[in-house]
Image 1 (cartoon, rainbow, N blue to C red):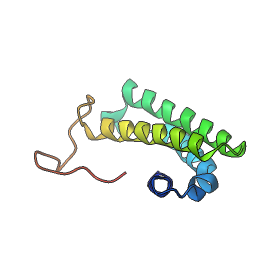
Image 2 (cartoon, rainbow, N blue to C red):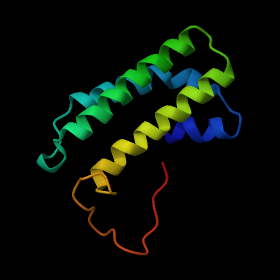
Image 3 (tube, rainbow, N blue to C red):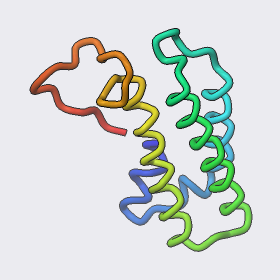
Image 4 (cartoon, helix red, strand yellow):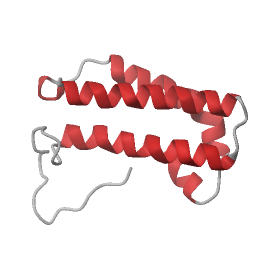
Amino acid sequence: MAGTFHPLEEGNFEPIRKRAGEMAQKALAWQKSTPPADFNKPEVAGALAKLVSGSDALAAMVGKNASNDELKASLTALHDTFHTVVGLCKGEGHGGPPAKGRGKGKGKGKG
């Protein structure tokens, strides 16, 4: 995600145009993987399903040579979905267990 979203923020659409299919494949692989028991919850499964469908849609848009504005809107929404999944897995107010080593005063990571 970071290898496509952050360049896009700077106006570089080449990474997402080249890697959209790979992103869709990785989203599907993540969805099909067996999560740890603490994260095997409907909320996580739902967010992953949204990530897969959004990744597939983005890859289709790239295949149809969508405009940069269309790609930016789609990838931005997908980036938000990705962070929803990560948040659910870190217990950041989404009903999951708290992440190890994360307490008051700790900063968020990049994504």
